Image (cartoon, rainbow, N blue to C red; front, side):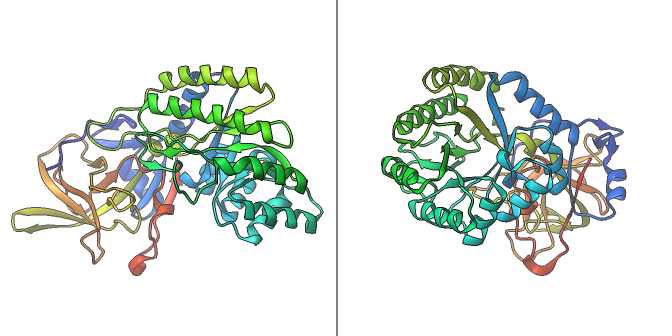
Length: 408
């Protein structure tokens, strides 16, 4: 049995129902018109951005990683809150441009960019994060064909990694970026090709709750970038050191100590400003900005008893929320925080397994968790669902309807 999760504190509860954006969950479900659906709260996102602005040292630019949640309405809202967007496909670039973000404040990273994507990015004037020498050569040829000087930065694969990261993106053999020892030669070639060099991108890992590990990685990133800048064809104007800020999902996890991260970043920023005063330091955050602002809601269809175990069968599942099912990077499956959204406190409680309608035992949203007794028609809510939810899930699996998304 999974221990009971700590009481959720993101959203208020009134008359035993979760409230999102000031709307009771049953009424919100009627407003949406069908289940399952995702809902993201504007005030929570605004508050998280405000927290970062008030805590991080002045001079740090805040970028939103669109891959965390590319819902167009959410991205448009974010365009007014952050300093830039980071995208990882032409589709995300279109969403970012449609949201009104200036092309000069959009960067495009990721291995395996197709020529069509590179042409679109060069034509748009966004900053391309080069992932290889071969990609650099293709970008240069495209720039010549279009008569446009491409704006570029070099993504570096450093020799170090982000300790305790849920997903490591650097250190050792990686498909991301250029190995640090190869970068000086690449920079000299970049100058010969006449590309518009802006700086470096280092992204060491994601979903980290250790302030000390993040501090160390940020310090090492700046030190490495300053060394590499000695071979750059022009001054380093921008340094994107990624993010990696995590959010607690599971019992026993503690929220990231943002103040400690900010204190360490202030010291690191001082080193950078002395050595390279023209360089803008960028933090690229996705999950930390939106994960806790979102919920996934599905409706109970049936209660079923099998060998003494209660199953609550819903109209949602892994095809909509792969991460909550434990199939998005978990080695040992752990339950996301899950509740009966219209029975948050009252009524009898029981140990249940919440499953979806798919023909696979992997379609499990909660395994033997304690929660309020649910009946058909009640609403199951999966918290921490604002990032890597629907867009990271196999929505076409078994051809069920795609869930709606709302911003409230």
